[in-house]
Image 1: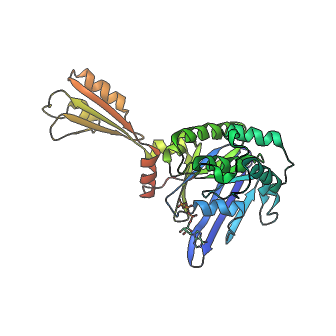
Image 2: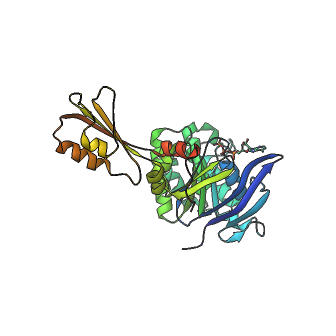
Image 3: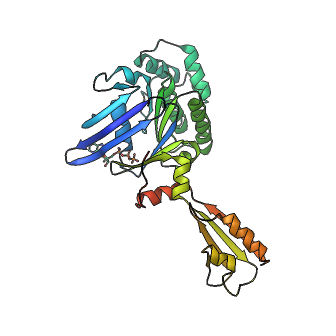
Length: 311
Ligand SMILES: Nc1ncnc2c1ncn2[C@@H]1O[C@H](COP(=O)(O)OP(=O)(O)OP(=O)(O)O)[C@@H](O)[C@H]1O
């Protein structure tokens, strides 16, 4: 496998007696979209800040593009972009000017075409000459993203990029993030919109109280921690749990009209039970299935279901 874009070993950050990050080891692969998930105060922003130079780590090592930041804290960071949680630009610059300043800040030459390209991609070109303070909240967020990307970083941190933005912008951003990743940019995303992680991520990491609990492919996490629930409603109450239901360990409601089956990894598929029930000729009035979402899965993990081996 190609060498990691970012490699953390034993990363720890303490504030006095408080430990914000505890012995975090994590490798981010080139071109992946990695979602770092966890509750408020888990340590996500502290981790990102340590890589971007906003937080001074207490111990451990950070290698960016193969280079140890203790040895060279500046050069590798030129290829990193950060979309911070908080809006932080000078209100007196125009949109275009703030992007030119950003490029200069990252040591890139002035490049009108690049600024136009990023503004167009983020649907902000019409506001090119507006002062940043005259932008709406959603436009300010687009500009934050434009600023993080204008210098063509190889690794981009998106720290809750869609907090407080409308559905349309969220969808636009997802499309854009996918495009960046398909072009080879590596993305690390934190979000409390778990649907966002479910949509975008290749892998997820779950962090809580400064400790990384799990790192795994998204599909595998959903499969292993998630479940599929099949609810079958019969037209009339049945005398007892029909035979296929007993075989599958399904349950019957008190009114004997509804059968529920929970399919977890390793169980027989819900479809097989449904086929068997139809085979019995019992009149069924409704069938409902529900698959766990990332939100359910995260709650399960944070509740401390037996931990699998991390990747
Ligand atoms: N400068 C600081 N001094 C003391 N404690 C801090 C400081 N910065 C962060 N912390 C603490 O470190 C912990 C981790 O904070 P962090 O901002 O990394 O969480 P987070 O996972 O990004 O949370 P959120 O989802 O709310 O943004 C929190 O308990 C926070 O209060």
